[in-house]
Length: 293
Ligand SMILES: [Zn+2]
Image 1: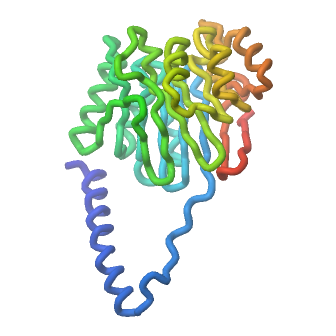
Image 2: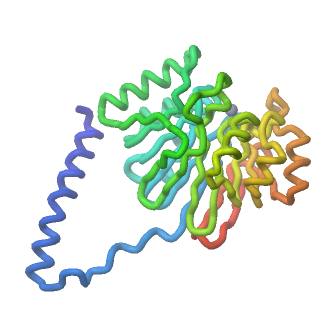
């Protein structure tokens, strides 16, 4: 057993021991029920990390953190997320097996104690994917839980609950469309994280009857014309749209017609190539957007 995991086990045992002690103290002092519960954390921060061409999003509620994708191997996100992850990283989601999403997760899984890993069930023959899965299996061997996302499941940690809207039960042939799509509702504010989901997945999500309205949308597939159909945007009704793109990328993302469509619905567009890392903070009532440039 490695040291990280041993320390974690000891931590869990102490926590279990603390419960009877707390009950005993409560009975001795006669002040049972008078201690207020710890205050819930009142705001969360969602970091859309500038990883050049690729996705990496950290949701931080203070006590709990969820990382959706890790960008490519370079530049990596370990140094960035270390500033925010206290203790273990509760949840890592790999939306789909493309290198611009899982490459950076290899280092993350090696560096952090991870509780849960969520995969979309697709495979790849790429070297990056093989290396990624070897790391996932090594984490699994030391106690990390590996889950396969299915529509209607919920990923839950602390006060963060993310509904899974995609992939469907039967996977598409095209791996982008099998991206794990997550909706986070925090009070009155909702986020939609679309991975690289394209039109076919969008149609599927529109037809399921799941809630997918969100004020903040991480647009599918790097704001490519293969995603963000007018019907989907009309359903989501985003006020803020984030395009995760690298400067001068060879796909010419974001595509102009998508920027135009977003302009037509009145959404404010943020782009990691021009704005750098984008942080959206919310207390569940309102939200603020901060950019690094
Ligand atoms: Zn991608």
